[in-house]
Length: 205
Image 1 (cartoon, rainbow, N blue to C red):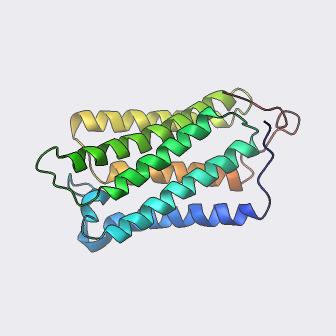
Image 2: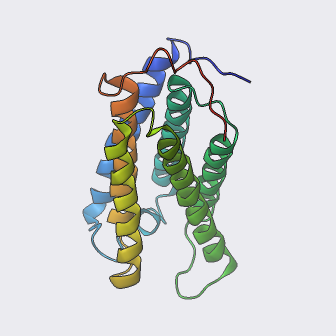
Image 3: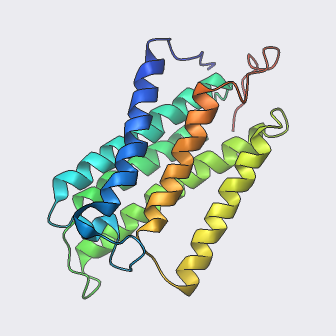
């Protein structure tokens, strides 16, 4: 079923939510003297006794990316189901991650395992949604190619870091900020205009 663009009233809501997510996500990791470059500088450990702050980040980031991905899908006439399921999968992962905070990191207890499963599901869902959308639209919108290359390089960088120096807070901050900036540019600037002749043709995956 073809989905039209979101109503104009949704535009300021999507923009405000995404901007708040970006700003909050760049400020929170540096609060209370936290060092995001440290192995123990992740948001999960920073907020293990400040769970409310993490939930604010999780809701702003998760919903901000989800509604703006839907905005992006409709703007560029993606009418498939697959990528929308990936976004829902990511949201469920974020909720599971937030719900399993304040667990012991001394062993792989069930709560810690569930926390990691949630985080992996969130990251995997977003990666699929962004990668497959840009892969599917890059031929039609050549301006998407640099964004696609940037996302691929970021994912490769995360993988290399995990295999070499391990995880830290920047692994959470930078990818999320990058995705939010990409959505801000594509949804709210004229840098990637919609092709009026092709935008009405639905694409399914």
